[in-house]
Length: 264
Ligand code: NAD
Image 1: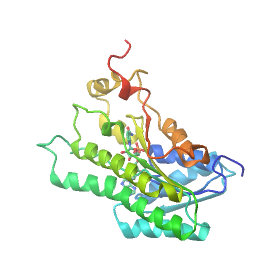
Image 2: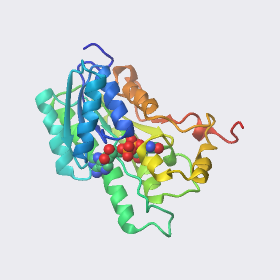
Image 3: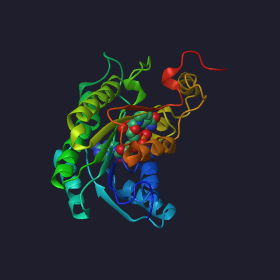
């Protein structure tokens, strides 16, 4: 299949969720071989069925259960791509935002640790084993994309302190890895999505109109983003078109983080 990602072996974590699934669809459309990874096997089965339905000509699609907070899982997942010719792209996208995450006083320590184990350590393990795989397979280029969030860039008076701190860590570690590995041809970029219409946020907002309005008012566009709008950015970052894009906080937010007063 000819496409912007033809011949590339890619892993997407959190592939059964909003951003991950839309990215898997676009990666498959662009000719990548895709391993969809997630902690939930039933959700993965549904996700891969959807990709197959939408992209019947997909080159190679497989699924793998992986808890990104467990290094052995991440290592085995990435090493499994050696038999495909080695990893070229990893989208470290799995993440959680826990309902009990709150401010400095009320966030339980267990929620802090859980959030950081998945959102930060999970990304670190993904980066670590991606670098080892790229070297092992003698790759002269590779693209690692890590999902952060706009909350790593702008403050919110609706606190989810553990989540925000975890995404700040993703930005910082990604930037540093971009500097360390640039001469090897390995690019590291952070994706910074604004709040989206995905289960992660929408389940939490439910039908609470006030809670929703409190957030929507900050969007110049007057709406939340769509997962596919993030996925298009990920395709770009994964592709060779982005060969000079490295260490960026790649913000896809409809202008939200640049807003002061939005239009009525
Ligand atoms: P989602 O909840 O729809 O999907 C997340 C996926 O990650 C789920 O399929 C879940 O099963 C999986 N997952 C959870 N824990 C895991 C683990 N330990 N190992 C492997 N997989 C695990 O969420 P989404 O909106 O698609 O979010 C994807 C990423 O984007 C997350 O990192 C999130 O923090 C970030 N993000 C989301 C928004 C938003 O508004 N949705 C905004 C900014 C950033």
